[in-house]
Image (cartoon, rainbow, N blue to C red):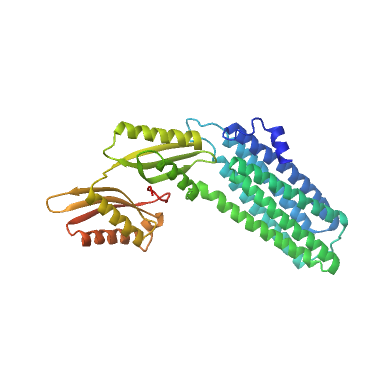
Length: 400
């Protein structure tokens, strides 16, 4: 069924790297979800009114909020597909994140209102009229929501859309919530305890609030600048290290300007004795391949490193060993040895987790001090000049 819809409504459906095709996928998922949620809202509201059940009505309002969320997502896809302009040179893809945030806030508002209504139902219960029609509506809702979860998860994974993947999870959660409402209706009919309906309504409201809070967190993270996916970091570094002459990668930064719109920058280490023009050509190849194969605009800085010098290699190995012992997540790079008449300067950068630079425990400062002390104990006439910096995308950094 999902494949049939995709083939029918999306031209060139296999070309998901095309922004227009990606938008068509998003529009299809959102429009179908809106239609399904509106039908479920109408059916549950009617059934809840006939049965006098606040939990069924509450579940119907949840579907209405889902339909509103789908509309906001649809607008997000439309706006996010707009091309870059002089005022927004990085494009408009972050509209999808803003749409997700708006959806999350709407869910929280609905959850609060349902919580108040259900609490009143617990304090002042009213008779609930059970019938096969409301039960059939709820059962049909469960089946529809299972299919919607499959649809959104399938399309979300196809176009790498966190918004649709979250929508799929929300639909799956609705199956649980609706199942709880159906159980409440049956239990109320069997036991005659009208408060069960209000208690289940409270449960659904709490569930909606919990989902809304989780969605707020998930949508705020990329807007604030969350740490990149470790698998993406590893993939970029492995790709760069696979080119001839590349000895190491550091200072990797990934800027997320919305789904499918990433900019990356990093430094690569290459032998200082190598041909500069050949090294530059390798860098050009990496940047082009990241753009063509992975859809990422890359800016790469060339760092020449001295190889073949026994003393330099000894110090580099010693520092890497000490750093691994003191803080496994630390990364030593840009090492230079500058000998002088009275002492030798050992100059390098030390990248650490971002919180180490500013935390009250001064872990970054303590690490620098420990490295400096270790070097001077080994080589008394060597003095360390260390630049402490945050590691924005920690990974392996060097060839094995």
